[in-house]
Image 1: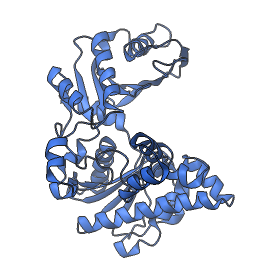
Image 2: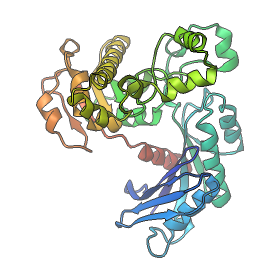
Image 3: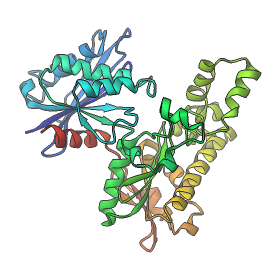
Image 4: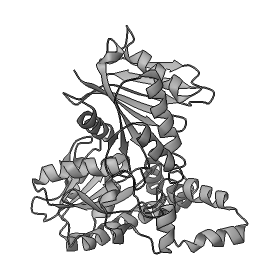
Length: 398
């Protein structure tokens, strides 16, 4: 039994899964919350049906990881007898800049390179590094792999990833499109290629959730993606504004007397679905409010759907057509009305949706929601970023 521990470390949280890579089954998973904050807690769920919640101070990620390992080997609820049954650890790392076009075994050089990308990922990379450091302290000698959100976008042509700013800004400061959700886009693209039985297919993947992005690929290689230097560009999201006229930033600063930090907070935390609706950043709340007659909630959803449609159209143009559209992530997998809105009036592209089946198809499964005669197939494919990380880790470390 070869077990891979997958770690996704945030600034004050740590998600974990223990995966038996031979059978590709999750044997335990959970979350450490409020690391470094009062009221820290660990939740744990095993495939044996055990559920545990532990309130315990977690001053840092190292303590959190130690608690995770302790519960995994616990005599009562644990799923492994000792630490030697963890063969390797896979870490999600958000920003790899231009340094990483694929997953890598972690060594001192890799850690230095991830540190050098902190200016590009100031919120996420320090937390990812804390997760790596915590594991190295508690699990010395266990091989570890870094899997980068930005690796997928490294296949883009320069004409797709460059911004039309002075060229020196790219050369000196790395200002370009990187794209995010790459592990998810890569995973569902791979599944779509398998379902189509066409390794050269042109695929548009819609990762729609609280954070959303659209990407397109030919033969499994990324052609373009909607997020940019940061995850702020592209679709309007739960609380992020998405793409807008860049001059709005200086206009707000001058008219509202806001500094850069305040404008950044407005664009990242107070905009998007929340900012337009005034109701919520959660699509379930928006759907309910819109049905109850809330015009602003309806407007927020309409704007989101319109934006997804625009990306699908532009990416079909960039690839000289499209063979399949994929919906994934929380909203893409579960919000039938958003999917229906996006797919409405797309016959010109060869997309013939089965709207009835879209309303009744099972959740949590890979399904095709286009008609049998549809030239372009439409799939709903549940994403599994942790499994993608585990596979890469096994490939490199075992």
